[in-house]
Structures are given as structure tokens and as C-alpha cells.
Length: 141
View 1 (cartoon, one colour):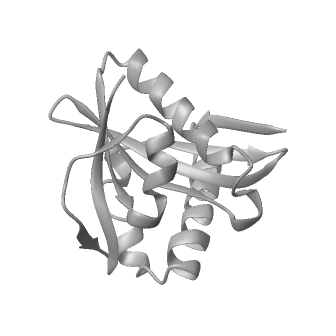
View 2 (spheres, helix red, strand yellow):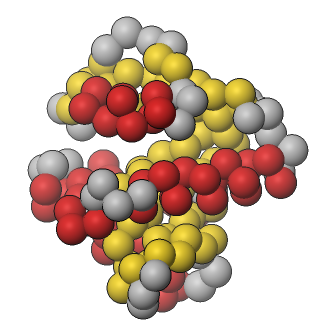
């Protein structure tokens, strides 16, 4: 059973970091010092569990009264199962509870169709982040 929760303790945070390292550092070759950055302590973290196994993660912070969705990732064996959508829905629910009306994110270009299905629109030209092509996207919630 898939369950997404807001990280409440160090163990859950380490589990979220573990998923992020597997996806971004191991799979995509992002340097670990770019993946785990100076914004970790200012962010609300989310972890997705498949039964009790951490299988997805994301983080959220507020910039200029807009919610910034970051570091969305799902382990390979959980992709195309609705896991990514479940993380995004939990983050959007949280953002609404914080009184926010808009969200933004920087999507890897290969992930743009996923975010478009969730109502996000591309609002920038392509740019590189950690050597990976991205575009900024935004959604009113």
C-alpha cells in the first residue's frame, strides 16, 4: 500500500534522502553536494512508502509567497504506478493548508508530460541544472 507522509523525524528524513540519492546521484549522476543542499533545513520533506519501504520523496518550501516543489523522485520499480502523482497531491494539499494559491517547479524536460497531466504549465525556456535540461513550470491551486 502506498502512503505519502510529511517527514516528522530524522529516520524519515534519512529515508527521503536515501531515495533522492538513489534516483538523482546514482541514476542521474548528480553530484551529491548538489543534491543535498543548503535548503534542506528550510524545507518541508515528504516521503512515499510502498508498505514500509521508502520508494519516493519530494521537498517543498515557500519563495516569495509561492510554493516551490523540488526533488520529486520515485524509485525505478515504483514508476508509472501513481506514486509520483501521490507525492504531488500530498504536497499540493499541504500547500493549500498553508494558504498558498500557486506552485512552481523546475522539471527535467523528460518529466514535463507528467507535470502537465497534473495541471502545470511551462513558463520558461530550457536551462541546465546539474547538467540536465529543465524548464520552469507553474500551477494555480
